[in-house]
Amino acid sequence: MLADLDRVLFDEETILHRLDQLAGQISADYRDRKLTVIAILNGSLIFMADLLRRIPLPLRLDCLSVASYHGGLQTSGEVIFRQIAQPDIAGRDILLLDDILDSGTTINAIREKLQTASPKSIRVCVLLRKIKDRGRPIEADYIGFDIADEFVVGYGLDYGEGYRNLPCIGVLKKELMT
Ligand code: IMP
Ligand code: MG
Image (cartoon, rainbow, N blue to C red; front, side, top):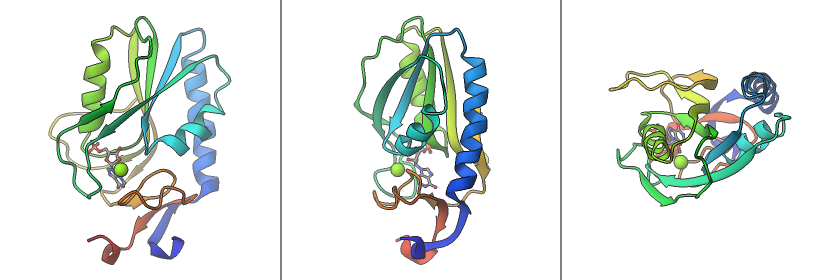
């Protein structure tokens, strides 16, 4: 699997060090609030597990499953809710977790949908953000790393459902992307 990478962007130690910092920031911001974390499957699973164990606050956890990529490289622009958890989010402070902010379509659609259930607040935390021109402004409140507009895999991120269990994040070799 590692041999399929063109290069490693972030090794495990670098990722975990950054998670220490993010968790510290989130823990300070959500002290004395009613935190519900909503993780977007499957990409944020590994990120979620490592991040939440660094946040020593009472919190609730729910997961949401959506599809916008259909296994390819380009977003389809359409976000399909495969299942929506029915967490009681009314009056609670919601932190959405996703693996990567690319076009922003996924996060925007989820944010709009959750907004209808009257949460007290919604913030977004992503492990990665691609630096690119976006049609509409989309910002995350907590960002692990900014990266160039390249296709990356590992640490939860997939290509055709593969590579999620790589402990590092890297750029997949171009010839492997068909
Ligand atoms: P967006 O809706 O365009 O922001 O796409 C977000 C989703 O697309 C992410 O949650 C990922 O599942 C997937 N995605 C976007 N860029 C990459 C990438 O470089 N590698 C793997 N998955 C990606
Ligand atoms: Mg994916």
